Length: 337
Image (tube, rainbow, N blue to C red):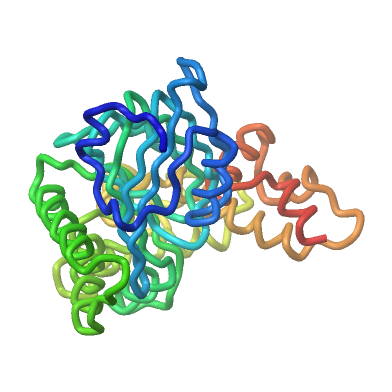
């Protein structure tokens, strides 16, 4: 038995599905890591004496619903989740979420977080934070997104903040509460019916893939007739960037290739690709760097490959590469050598 704050204990859900209950940091990191993924867990601000960890988990086919609470304040560093997406809805306390490109602060009735498996993440849970967490299998999400967008399966990366004050967040809050209640009513010794499992899976997938912005949202909108297709001028510009990615960017030349003005080109990239011309060129170069590193022969150096691809600032290149791929260029080269 561990001591917990009265408010946290009062909000505990899925009590019959207890998987972890401990006051020891190392035991919590090891046990929760077996359920989710290996991660670093460190108490912050206060002493270890106020630490506790609770993890209750009801698992189904392709997804699970979890209640997780930590006493005091803790730093959690899972890196890249790799195998799954996590939708985290706070019940108590708050959480600061840092991803490669965004920082989000979540709290009850304010904001939830949606973590993608390919984006490295760090978190600090504060104030005896307790959350309901829905885990969705990565392949399930990626294959459904591909089907909705008429594309091949590829990584899906969501915007990490879900506003609980807006329609999607409000709907998800209600749906997840119903899912937890249904699991509690079933208990750990009765299985959810196959039909109900499919219905819940479809509900969660459709809500997230159609309601929350992500890297395939534009493709889904176009495929389903909700958005216009990319203008030919932008297709020409992007194709030119891909074939000339190693060369310095010349906006006037690129606009000429596209057959449009520079300002119209910049607005078009923002509107249709959700990025700037420079950001797209960087993304293309990073993808080419990753491919070159994976096929590098003995004796090839990262610095030489980077300069060949047009990178001039190696430290900025390394930071951008790590943000995109979750590891350094050196780690990619070492892992594949």
